Length: 220
Image 1 (cartoon, one colour):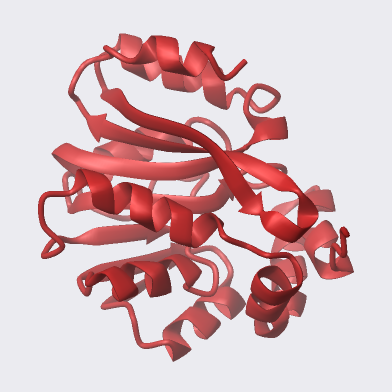
Image 2 (cartoon, one colour; image 1 turned 90 degrees about the vertical axis):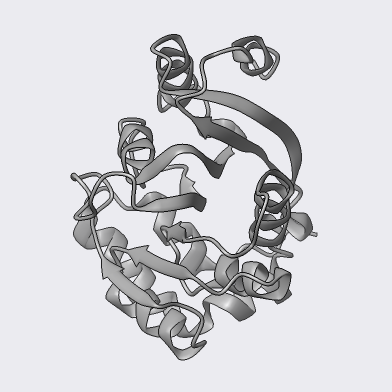
């Protein structure tokens, strides 16, 4: 049975950054309960496990981009990762993430703008729940590549309904053709189990060519 909280719906109905931040501010202290317990949010743990499969060591620097309350950080911590930075535009969500004591650094950042992070800073970047309705545009992929070192990995989710509508698919293929990254894994999997919502789970390697472009085509 679908039991979508009204506060969740507000994050997808926002038409401005101010409306989006207000929606997350109203939801921050209830976010974990609503998403995990009520909606069956498994996206963070599935994305964390997928990234982990591609990394040769857990002793590496990871950026949790669009971290929210730190659910991805919790999943990575359970796997043995400890060198993690968190980035989000919502100060209220970052405050909740900070309470978990998982991150070395908290970054307040509008991901639609150039990231205030030097090139090649991270060994891996993970971004769950951000490439979706009314959140960030496809140009953000290039910034994630910029802050991730050559040979590093980027794992992220894209909601099925937003995959082509918001230009994500087109941008991914363009960046593969430009040899900015190469697709290593794509899975269609459960995202919000109790809402019967699925998502696409991607893992790319930075600047390794575009050998797997045909895999995205299968997701049409």
